[in-house]
Amino acid sequence: MLRDGQAAAGNSAADWIRAIAEGQDRAAFASLFEFYAPRIKAMLTRLGAAADAAEDLAQETLLTVWRKAGYFDPARASASAWIFTIARNLRIDRLRGDNRAKLYAPYEMVEPEGPENPDSALNAAERDARVRAALKELSQEQVRVLQLSFFEGRAHGDIAALLNLPLGTVKSRVRLAMARLRNLLGDLQ
Amino acid sequence: MSIIHHPSDATLAAFASGTLDEARGIVVAAHLALCAQCRNGVHAFEEAGGALLDDVEPAVLSAGALQRAMAALGPLDIISPAIRGAAAVSDLPAPLSHYAVGPWRWIGRGVQWRPVEVASDEGVRVFMLKAAPGTKLPRHRHTGTEWTCVFEGAFTHDLGRYGSGDFDEADESVEHNPVVDAAHGCVCLVALQGHIELQGWLGRLIQPFVRI
Image (cartoon, rainbow over all chains, first blue to last red; front, side):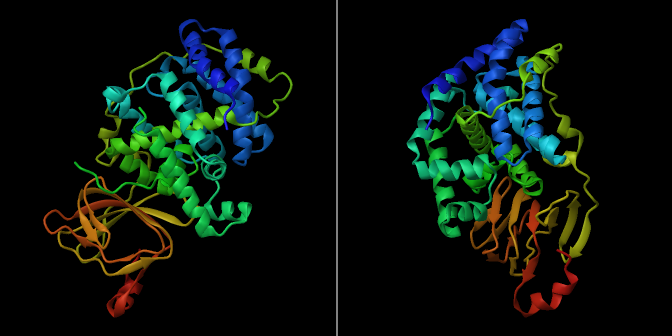
């Protein structure tokens, strides 16, 4: 499912973020922007945002990445996961206007003492490889329900209608795909 | 503390992706604050979200998007240590500190109720429940989901014993009659969709007087 060139860009993203944190490297920012801004816009559009709102949020996500570059910790998350969570929180905050983005603070705050399980701490490249390998292990069908449920925020009923399947089948496929992915990712920290 | 009952993977994934509604998200966040295993699960799904983001077909940006972003670059944030213990200022569990929480009110023998103010377009109400030791709640079913995170004490129903930190993800198909721990009582946070329907002649008799 994943093309190799994109995985490579995902890996250098951590270096770009570090270059921003250490030297306010504008060229590194431009590289990050060119890779992620069009993808964040696409993701937000799929989640139901209008094109201009999605682009504004993509801009804001990348500007937040710039400002908070010093907070990025490759031992805790890959660059793409970190950027994903920034876009997620901004989307909730701006488009929904509710308190949900704050719900992510308490459990993020529990972390600074270090990884939950230091022995199994993976470096960024290992973790990235593992996530990609896990996604490749899923069937096309599982990836599809995963994308719809996870990525596009579809409820089970919606997915059933889109895929033209009975609701019970969709529920069990979502459950299976999630469990499989979780299993493959294991204690990812 | 040993936690036995956890949110489903689909629920952790929905939380990680930001697509879970706020009302149910509060109860999940309350569990996450207590459960390292599920925090790891959410992180795993966030990694999956990152990989899906890398892989999505890119959209076309409007002309000059990069130049506008470059022009908006300012100073970086100065790194300050995470504000530790901010939640401890309140006597409430961490995720509730962002919300207005009403006073405790008696709603029946041995049971107190405390509303958490959160809007929901899916008809989900969030409240804390405090039940005295040994309280037997009437057999009931739900018209929607009923998600519960236990803070203190425990309750037991057909599916097991739910102690401190445990998460009970009941959907509309569940009918149960929880019994509260005889020694410690129970304090929990509930996100209830729709309303509960009491079963049996006694339940139907008292239904009009029960507010939840």
